[in-house]
Amino acid sequence: MKKFLAVSLGLAAMVGFVACGGDDGGGTQPAQDAIQEGVQPDAPGGELLLDGAAPTETVGEGTGDVAKEAAQEVVCTPNCTGKVCGSDGCGGSCGECKDGDKTLCLPDGSACVKPCDIAGTVTKWDKVGVLASLETPGDKAVVEQKCPDFSGDSKGDNGLKGLASTVNGELAKMVQEGKFNIAMEFKGVTDFENTASFTLNGLLVDPDPTDTSTPKEKWQVDPQSYNPADCTPLIAFKDAKIAGGKLSGGPTTFSLTLAIEQLGGALTFTLEKGQVSMTVKDDKVTAEDGVLAGVLTKDQVDATLAKAKEQCNVPKPPDFCNYLSMAESFLPMLFDLDQNGDGKKDAASLCLLFSLRGATITGLVPPKTN
Image (tube, rainbow, N blue to C red; front, side, top):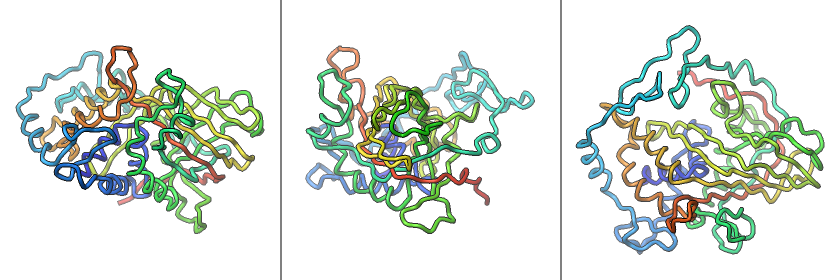
C-alpha cells in the first residue's frame, strides 16, 4: 500500500517531486510513511479515503496481485513509429545510440544526440534561495484566496487539498532536516526590488556534506536538474519579473524524469500552466508568500502511466509495476478540473505554498562511488 501511494503521488507531479528528494538519492520512504499514517481508521479494510470519497472509491490491499495476473494475459504489440532509439513499449528496443559521440537517446526516441557535459558546463550559479517552508493548503478559504484560478470561477484551486493533513507534517520535517529541498536561482538578477525580465530556475539540491550549520547554508545541485542534451535547467520560468518586490513567473510547461530507487524505476512528470509567485524581501533571496502551482492533465497522467508500463514488459519488472493498476483508479480522485467543458473532471490542479531563505551553491552533487 505504501509503495502504491508513493507512485500515485509521484504521478501527481509536485508531490512526486517531493517524494523523490533526499540525501540518499531516493527519499521516498518519509513521504510514504506520511501517507500511510493518513489512512482513516473507519475506512473499510484500513483503506485510504480522500475528502468526499465514498467507500466505493477506496483503494485497498491485494489489488496489485490481481493487476499482475491480468497484465500477464495482455499481448504486447511493439511500436517504433517515429523512433530510432529507446523502448518499443514491450521490453524491446527501437535502436541503440552508438553513432560516434551521439550516445544519448532523446526521451521521445526521435533521435540520438551528443550528451552535454553537465559537470564541465554548469560551474557557477547566481543568487539562490532554498525552501524554508513548504506545504499544500487544505483549508478551502486559503486555497480560494492564495492558489491560482484554473477553473475560471475566480477562486483558487488545489486538487491536493484532501491530502494536506496527511503530507504537510512530513513535508515540513523533510525541509527542516535538509532531506529534501529546491533552490530557486535568480539568473542575472541584481535588483531584487524591480527587474523587468529574467529566468527563475528550479534546481534539486542536497546539503553540502561539509556544512555543519543549522539550518544548512551550503548546498550542492543534483545534476538531474539539467537536461542531459543541452545542460539547461529542466524547470525554468522564463520572462519572470519582479515589480515592487513582487515576483511572478509563468505560465510554463516543464517535464522531469526522476529515478525512484526504492521502486526500481523512473517516472516522467509533465506539469502544464506552471506558475510561481512570491514576495522577495531582500537581496539575500529571502522570500515569503510563495505559491508554486500548475495543472496535471488526464492526458499527461495517461502518458506517464504508458511510459511506466513500458518498464514493466521485461522478465524482471520494477516493483512499482504491481501498483500501476491501482494508480489508474486512485489518480482520478485528485482531478478537480474540467478542461474541455464536457462535464467530466479531466485534470488536477496542484498548489504548493512556500517561503525561501538565502543559500549558497558550492557545486554539483558528486557521482556516487561503489
